[in-house]
Image (cartoon, rainbow, N blue to C red; front, top):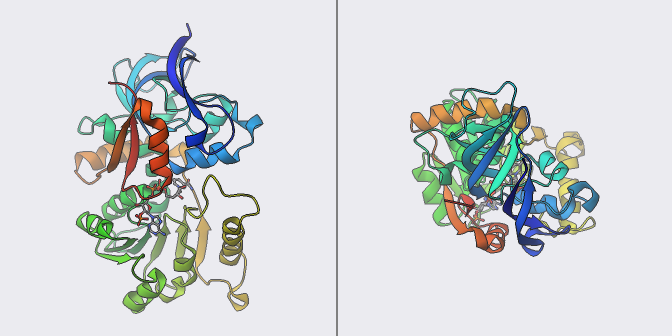
Length: 352
Ligand SMILES: NC(=O)c1ccc[n+]([C@@H]2O[C@H](COP(=O)([O-])OP(=O)(O)OC[C@H]3O[C@@H](n4cnc5c(N)ncnc54)[C@H](OP(=O)(O)O)[C@@H]3O)[C@@H](O)[C@H]2O)c1
Protein backbone atom coordinates (compact mmCIF):
# COMPACT_ATOMS: atom_id res chain seq x y z
CA UNK A 1 0.00 0.00 0.00
CA UNK A 2 1.24 3.49 -0.80
CA UNK A 3 2.35 5.70 2.15
CA UNK A 4 2.35 9.44 2.66
CA UNK A 5 5.48 11.27 3.74
CA UNK A 6 6.70 14.74 4.65
CA UNK A 7 8.91 16.10 1.86
CA UNK A 8 10.47 19.24 0.52
CA UNK A 9 9.22 19.84 -3.02
CA UNK A 10 10.70 21.71 -5.98
CA UNK A 11 7.67 23.53 -7.32
CA UNK A 12 9.10 25.09 -10.49
CA UNK A 13 12.27 25.24 -12.56
CA UNK A 14 14.93 27.51 -11.00
CA UNK A 15 17.72 27.66 -8.39
CA UNK A 16 16.60 25.52 -5.42
CA UNK A 17 16.72 27.89 -2.47
CA UNK A 18 14.04 29.90 -4.26
CA UNK A 19 11.84 27.05 -5.49
CA UNK A 20 11.23 24.62 -2.61
CA UNK A 21 8.41 24.33 -0.11
CA UNK A 22 7.54 21.79 2.56
CA UNK A 23 4.64 19.41 1.96
CA UNK A 24 3.07 16.96 4.46
CA UNK A 25 1.48 14.43 2.15
CA UNK A 26 3.68 13.23 -0.69
CA UNK A 27 2.87 9.70 -1.87
CA UNK A 28 5.57 7.01 -1.74
CA UNK A 29 4.87 3.71 -3.49
CA UNK A 30 5.66 0.38 -1.77
CA UNK A 31 8.85 -1.33 -2.99
CA UNK A 32 8.51 -3.47 -6.12
CA UNK A 33 10.91 -6.24 -7.19
CA UNK A 34 14.48 -4.95 -6.93
CA UNK A 35 13.52 -2.00 -4.72
CA UNK A 36 13.77 -1.10 -1.04
CA UNK A 37 11.97 1.47 1.05
CA UNK A 38 14.14 3.59 3.34
CA UNK A 39 13.34 5.84 6.28
CA UNK A 40 15.83 8.65 5.73
CA UNK A 41 17.74 9.97 8.75
CA UNK A 42 20.08 12.43 6.97
CA UNK A 43 20.06 13.91 3.47
CA UNK A 44 23.25 15.39 2.06
CA UNK A 45 23.24 18.22 -0.49
CA UNK A 46 25.29 18.59 -3.67
CA UNK A 47 25.93 21.54 -6.02
CA UNK A 48 24.40 19.48 -8.86
CA UNK A 49 20.99 19.39 -7.09
CA UNK A 50 20.48 23.05 -7.66
CA UNK A 51 22.22 23.20 -11.08
CA UNK A 52 19.93 20.42 -12.34
CA UNK A 53 16.79 22.02 -10.94
CA UNK A 54 17.66 25.31 -12.60
CA UNK A 55 18.77 23.98 -15.96
CA UNK A 56 16.58 20.93 -16.76
CA UNK A 57 13.42 22.02 -18.60
CA UNK A 58 10.22 21.68 -16.52
CA UNK A 59 8.78 18.95 -18.79
CA UNK A 60 11.81 16.74 -18.00
CA UNK A 61 11.60 17.20 -14.22
CA UNK A 62 8.22 15.70 -13.28
CA UNK A 63 7.48 18.59 -10.90
CA UNK A 64 6.78 18.85 -8.04
CA UNK A 65 9.61 16.60 -6.90
CA UNK A 66 11.85 16.35 -3.84
CA UNK A 67 15.37 17.83 -4.12
CA UNK A 68 18.50 16.02 -2.98
CA UNK A 69 20.24 12.88 -4.06
CA UNK A 70 22.35 11.51 -1.20
CA UNK A 71 20.95 9.97 1.97
CA UNK A 72 21.51 7.65 4.92
CA UNK A 73 18.73 5.82 6.73
CA UNK A 74 17.20 2.49 7.65
CA UNK A 75 15.48 -0.08 5.41
CA UNK A 76 11.78 -0.34 6.31
CA UNK A 77 10.50 -2.67 3.56
CA UNK A 78 11.97 -4.84 0.81
CA UNK A 79 10.45 -5.65 -2.59
CA UNK A 80 10.11 -9.19 -3.89
CA UNK A 81 12.57 -10.99 -6.14
CA UNK A 82 16.29 -11.43 -5.85
CA UNK A 83 17.82 -9.02 -3.33
CA UNK A 84 21.29 -8.76 -1.75
CA UNK A 85 21.56 -10.43 1.70
CA UNK A 86 21.85 -7.10 3.50
CA UNK A 87 18.51 -5.88 2.10
CA UNK A 88 16.36 -6.52 5.19
CA UNK A 89 14.13 -4.33 7.31
CA UNK A 90 16.32 -2.68 9.96
CA UNK A 91 19.59 -2.55 7.96
CA UNK A 92 21.30 0.85 8.02
CA UNK A 93 22.05 2.00 4.48
CA UNK A 94 23.39 4.96 2.54
CA UNK A 95 22.93 5.70 -1.13
CA UNK A 96 21.62 8.06 -3.74
CA UNK A 97 18.61 8.83 -5.82
CA UNK A 98 20.42 9.17 -9.13
CA UNK A 99 19.93 12.30 -11.24
CA UNK A 100 18.08 10.30 -13.89
CA UNK A 101 15.74 8.81 -11.25
CA UNK A 102 15.20 12.20 -9.68
CA UNK A 103 13.99 13.77 -12.90
CA UNK A 104 12.03 10.70 -14.10
CA UNK A 105 10.25 10.16 -10.77
CA UNK A 106 9.38 12.76 -8.15
CA UNK A 107 11.81 11.33 -5.60
CA UNK A 108 14.63 13.04 -3.75
CA UNK A 109 16.45 12.62 -0.46
CA UNK A 110 14.80 15.57 1.31
CA UNK A 111 11.85 13.42 2.32
CA UNK A 112 11.25 11.15 5.29
CA UNK A 113 10.44 7.97 3.37
CA UNK A 114 11.67 6.95 -0.08
CA UNK A 115 11.47 3.90 -2.35
CA UNK A 116 14.53 3.36 -4.56
CA UNK A 117 16.21 0.64 -6.65
CA UNK A 118 18.25 -1.49 -4.22
CA UNK A 119 21.29 -1.17 -6.50
CA UNK A 120 21.68 2.49 -5.53
CA UNK A 121 22.11 1.71 -1.81
CA UNK A 122 24.78 -0.04 0.25
CA UNK A 123 24.90 -1.20 3.88
CA UNK A 124 26.49 1.36 6.20
CA UNK A 125 29.63 0.04 7.93
CA UNK A 126 28.99 -0.24 11.67
CA UNK A 127 31.92 2.11 12.42
CA UNK A 128 30.25 4.97 10.49
CA UNK A 129 27.32 7.03 11.79
CA UNK A 130 24.48 8.08 9.47
CA UNK A 131 25.53 11.72 9.52
CA UNK A 132 28.90 10.87 7.93
CA UNK A 133 27.53 8.13 5.65
CA UNK A 134 24.81 10.36 4.17
CA UNK A 135 27.11 12.36 1.88
CA UNK A 136 29.30 9.53 0.64
CA UNK A 137 27.62 8.37 -2.54
CA UNK A 138 27.68 11.13 -5.15
CA UNK A 139 31.08 12.62 -4.31
CA UNK A 140 32.55 9.20 -3.48
CA UNK A 141 31.46 7.63 -6.78
CA UNK A 142 33.00 10.64 -8.51
CA UNK A 143 36.25 10.36 -6.54
CA UNK A 144 36.34 6.64 -7.40
CA UNK A 145 36.34 7.45 -11.14
CA UNK A 146 39.23 9.91 -10.66
CA UNK A 147 41.22 7.54 -8.43
CA UNK A 148 40.79 4.47 -10.63
CA UNK A 149 43.85 4.86 -12.91
CA UNK A 150 46.24 5.87 -10.09
CA UNK A 151 48.90 3.27 -9.27
CA UNK A 152 51.35 2.69 -6.44
CA UNK A 153 54.24 5.13 -6.65
CA UNK A 154 52.37 7.77 -8.71
CA UNK A 155 52.74 11.47 -8.00
CA UNK A 156 49.29 13.03 -7.93
CA UNK A 157 47.98 16.60 -8.02
CA UNK A 158 44.45 17.20 -6.66
CA UNK A 159 43.02 20.54 -7.78
CA UNK A 160 40.42 21.46 -5.13
CA UNK A 161 41.73 19.47 -2.16
CA UNK A 162 39.05 20.92 0.15
CA UNK A 163 36.09 20.03 -2.08
CA UNK A 164 34.01 17.11 -0.85
CA UNK A 165 35.18 15.11 -3.87
CA UNK A 166 38.82 16.08 -3.23
CA UNK A 167 38.74 15.10 0.46
CA UNK A 168 37.60 11.53 -0.33
CA UNK A 169 39.84 11.36 -3.40
CA UNK A 170 42.93 12.04 -1.27
CA UNK A 171 42.02 9.10 1.01
CA UNK A 172 41.53 6.86 -2.04
CA UNK A 173 44.77 7.72 -3.85
CA UNK A 174 46.72 7.27 -0.61
CA UNK A 175 45.14 3.81 -0.28
CA UNK A 176 46.26 3.03 -3.84
CA UNK A 177 49.84 3.80 -2.84
CA UNK A 178 50.37 7.22 -4.44
CA UNK A 179 53.86 8.25 -3.34
CA UNK A 180 53.37 12.04 -3.29
CA UNK A 181 50.09 13.99 -3.21
CA UNK A 182 49.79 17.75 -3.67
CA UNK A 183 46.56 19.76 -3.47
CA UNK A 184 45.27 23.29 -3.99
CA UNK A 185 43.17 24.83 -1.20
CA UNK A 186 42.88 28.18 0.54
CA UNK A 187 43.49 29.79 3.96
CA UNK A 188 42.98 27.56 6.98
CA UNK A 189 41.72 24.77 4.70
CA UNK A 190 45.37 24.31 3.60
CA UNK A 191 46.30 23.15 7.13
CA UNK A 192 43.18 20.98 7.33
CA UNK A 193 43.98 19.04 4.14
CA UNK A 194 47.68 18.80 5.07
CA UNK A 195 46.78 17.17 8.40
CA UNK A 196 44.85 14.58 6.39
CA UNK A 197 48.06 13.37 4.75
CA UNK A 198 48.57 15.72 1.77
CA UNK A 199 52.30 16.27 1.24
CA UNK A 200 52.16 19.85 -0.03
CA UNK A 201 49.43 22.45 -0.50
CA UNK A 202 49.28 25.50 -2.77
CA UNK A 203 47.04 28.33 -1.50
CA UNK A 204 45.26 29.28 -4.72
CA UNK A 205 43.90 32.51 -3.21
CA UNK A 206 47.42 33.77 -2.32
CA UNK A 207 49.28 32.85 -5.51
CA UNK A 208 48.57 31.91 -9.11
CA UNK A 209 48.25 28.16 -8.48
CA UNK A 210 49.40 27.08 -11.95
CA UNK A 211 52.49 29.32 -11.79
CA UNK A 212 53.32 28.20 -8.26
CA UNK A 213 52.99 24.51 -9.19
CA UNK A 214 55.33 25.13 -12.13
CA UNK A 215 57.89 26.74 -9.81
CA UNK A 216 57.76 23.93 -7.25
CA UNK A 217 57.34 20.90 -9.53
CA UNK A 218 58.88 21.57 -12.96
CA UNK A 219 61.71 19.17 -12.13
CA UNK A 220 59.49 16.57 -10.41
CA UNK A 221 56.31 16.52 -12.50
CA UNK A 222 53.09 14.67 -11.66
CA UNK A 223 51.75 11.46 -13.20
CA UNK A 224 48.13 12.62 -12.80
CA UNK A 225 46.28 15.89 -12.34
CA UNK A 226 42.81 15.26 -10.88
CA UNK A 227 40.72 18.44 -11.03
CA UNK A 228 37.68 18.60 -8.72
CA UNK A 229 36.98 22.24 -9.55
CA UNK A 230 37.38 22.84 -13.30
CA UNK A 231 40.22 25.30 -12.80
CA UNK A 232 41.03 26.68 -16.28
CA UNK A 233 44.19 28.54 -15.27
CA UNK A 234 45.77 25.50 -13.60
CA UNK A 235 44.99 23.32 -16.61
CA UNK A 236 46.36 25.82 -19.13
CA UNK A 237 49.73 25.81 -17.31
CA UNK A 238 49.86 22.05 -16.63
CA UNK A 239 52.57 21.19 -19.21
CA UNK A 240 54.97 22.92 -16.78
CA UNK A 241 54.26 20.45 -13.93
CA UNK A 242 52.52 17.40 -15.47
CA UNK A 243 54.47 14.70 -17.33
CA UNK A 244 54.25 14.72 -21.14
CA UNK A 245 50.99 13.09 -22.32
CA UNK A 246 49.93 12.43 -18.71
CA UNK A 247 46.17 12.58 -17.96
CA UNK A 248 44.44 15.72 -16.68
CA UNK A 249 41.07 14.39 -15.48
CA UNK A 250 38.42 16.96 -14.62
CA UNK A 251 35.01 16.55 -12.97
CA UNK A 252 34.27 20.09 -11.88
CA UNK A 253 32.44 22.95 -13.50
CA UNK A 254 32.46 25.22 -10.47
CA UNK A 255 32.47 28.38 -12.60
CA UNK A 256 28.87 27.48 -13.51
CA UNK A 257 26.12 28.11 -11.00
CA UNK A 258 22.39 27.61 -11.03
CA UNK A 259 22.11 31.21 -12.25
CA UNK A 260 24.46 30.78 -15.24
CA UNK A 261 22.60 31.77 -18.41
CA UNK A 262 23.03 30.09 -21.80
CA UNK A 263 24.75 33.20 -23.20
CA UNK A 264 26.72 34.08 -20.05
CA UNK A 265 30.47 34.89 -20.18
CA UNK A 266 31.07 31.99 -17.68
CA UNK A 267 29.54 29.43 -20.04
CA UNK A 268 31.29 30.88 -23.11
CA UNK A 269 34.64 30.81 -21.31
CA UNK A 270 34.04 27.20 -20.13
CA UNK A 271 33.23 26.06 -23.67
CA UNK A 272 36.26 27.89 -25.12
CA UNK A 273 38.53 26.28 -22.50
CA UNK A 274 37.15 22.77 -23.05
CA UNK A 275 37.46 23.06 -26.84
CA UNK A 276 41.07 24.18 -26.43
CA UNK A 277 41.68 21.36 -23.94
CA UNK A 278 40.12 18.55 -25.95
CA UNK A 279 40.23 19.48 -29.62
CA UNK A 280 43.06 21.86 -30.53
CA UNK A 281 46.50 20.47 -31.44
CA UNK A 282 49.34 22.08 -29.51
CA UNK A 283 50.63 24.05 -32.56
CA UNK A 284 47.25 25.85 -32.56
CA UNK A 285 47.32 26.57 -28.82
CA UNK A 286 46.07 23.21 -27.50
CA UNK A 287 47.52 21.67 -24.35
CA UNK A 288 49.71 18.60 -24.97
CA UNK A 289 48.31 16.55 -22.08
CA UNK A 290 45.41 14.03 -22.09
CA UNK A 291 42.49 16.16 -20.92
CA UNK A 292 39.26 14.32 -20.07
CA UNK A 293 36.05 15.75 -18.62
CA UNK A 294 34.50 12.92 -16.65
CA UNK A 295 31.91 12.23 -13.95
CA UNK A 296 30.47 9.74 -11.54
CA UNK A 297 29.53 6.21 -12.58
CA UNK A 298 26.35 5.00 -10.82
CA UNK A 299 26.91 1.44 -12.00
CA UNK A 300 29.89 1.13 -9.60
CA UNK A 301 27.80 1.49 -6.41
CA UNK A 302 28.43 -2.07 -5.19
CA UNK A 303 32.18 -1.81 -5.82
CA UNK A 304 32.11 1.57 -4.06
CA UNK A 305 30.26 0.10 -1.08
CA UNK A 306 32.86 -2.63 -0.69
CA UNK A 307 35.68 -0.09 -0.91
CA UNK A 308 34.03 2.16 1.69
CA UNK A 309 33.56 -0.76 4.09
CA UNK A 310 37.19 -1.82 3.77
CA UNK A 311 38.63 1.69 4.06
CA UNK A 312 36.45 2.57 7.06
CA UNK A 313 37.47 -0.65 8.83
CA UNK A 314 41.13 0.10 8.10
CA UNK A 315 40.64 3.71 9.31
CA UNK A 316 41.68 5.06 5.88
CA UNK A 317 38.49 6.88 4.85
CA UNK A 318 37.40 9.95 6.79
CA UNK A 319 34.23 11.62 5.48
CA UNK A 320 33.92 15.28 6.47
CA UNK A 321 30.67 17.02 7.42
CA UNK A 322 30.82 20.80 7.45
CA UNK A 323 27.39 21.48 8.90
CA UNK A 324 24.05 19.78 9.53
CA UNK A 325 20.82 21.78 9.31
CA UNK A 326 17.39 20.91 10.69
CA UNK A 327 14.76 19.53 8.28
CA UNK A 328 12.82 22.79 8.45
CA UNK A 329 16.02 24.70 7.47
CA UNK A 330 16.49 23.18 3.99
CA UNK A 331 16.33 26.60 2.31
CA UNK A 332 19.15 27.90 4.56
CA UNK A 333 21.10 24.68 3.93
CA UNK A 334 20.98 25.19 0.16
CA UNK A 335 21.88 28.88 0.52
CA UNK A 336 24.92 27.83 2.58
CA UNK A 337 25.91 25.19 0.00
CA UNK A 338 25.66 27.47 -3.03
CA UNK A 339 27.90 30.05 -1.34
CA UNK A 340 30.60 27.48 -2.26
CA UNK A 341 32.82 27.77 0.83
CA UNK A 342 31.82 24.62 2.77
CA UNK A 343 34.58 22.30 3.98
CA UNK A 344 32.92 18.92 3.54
CA UNK A 345 29.30 17.95 3.24
CA UNK A 346 26.29 20.11 3.98
CA UNK A 347 23.60 17.89 5.52
CA UNK A 348 19.98 18.10 6.55
CA UNK A 349 18.75 15.97 9.45
CA UNK A 350 15.55 14.43 8.18
CA UNK A 351 14.43 12.21 11.08
CA UNK A 352 15.82 10.68 14.28
N1 LIG B 1 30.93 15.44 -12.88
C1 LIG B 1 30.39 14.85 -11.81
O1 LIG B 1 29.89 13.72 -11.85
C2 LIG B 1 30.44 15.62 -10.51
C3 LIG B 1 30.13 14.96 -9.32
C4 LIG B 1 30.26 15.66 -8.12
C5 LIG B 1 30.63 17.01 -8.15
N2 LIG B 1 30.86 17.62 -9.35
C6 LIG B 1 31.26 19.03 -9.42
O2 LIG B 1 32.54 19.08 -8.77
C7 LIG B 1 32.68 20.31 -8.07
C8 LIG B 1 33.01 20.02 -6.61
O3 LIG B 1 31.88 19.39 -5.97
P1 LIG B 1 31.87 19.20 -4.39
O4 LIG B 1 30.54 18.68 -4.01
O5 LIG B 1 33.08 18.43 -3.99
O6 LIG B 1 32.02 20.72 -3.96
P2 LIG B 1 32.01 21.38 -2.52
O7 LIG B 1 32.33 20.40 -1.45
O8 LIG B 1 30.75 22.18 -2.40
O9 LIG B 1 33.23 22.39 -2.73
C9 LIG B 1 33.41 23.46 -1.85
C10 LIG B 1 34.91 23.66 -1.69
O10 LIG B 1 35.50 23.99 -2.96
C11 LIG B 1 36.61 24.85 -2.70
N3 LIG B 1 36.93 25.60 -3.92
C12 LIG B 1 36.12 26.43 -4.61
N4 LIG B 1 36.77 26.95 -5.68
C13 LIG B 1 38.02 26.42 -5.67
C14 LIG B 1 39.17 26.56 -6.51
N5 LIG B 1 39.15 27.37 -7.59
N6 LIG B 1 40.28 25.85 -6.21
C15 LIG B 1 40.33 25.05 -5.12
N7 LIG B 1 39.27 24.87 -4.27
C16 LIG B 1 38.13 25.55 -4.54
C17 LIG B 1 36.07 25.75 -1.58
O11 LIG B 1 37.13 26.25 -0.84
P3 LIG B 1 37.45 27.84 -0.78
O12 LIG B 1 36.94 28.31 0.54
O13 LIG B 1 38.92 27.85 -0.90
O14 LIG B 1 36.75 28.52 -1.92
C18 LIG B 1 35.24 24.77 -0.73
O15 LIG B 1 36.03 24.22 0.35
C19 LIG B 1 31.36 21.07 -8.30
O16 LIG B 1 31.54 21.89 -9.45
C20 LIG B 1 30.36 19.97 -8.61
O17 LIG B 1 29.26 20.44 -9.37
C21 LIG B 1 30.79 16.96 -10.53
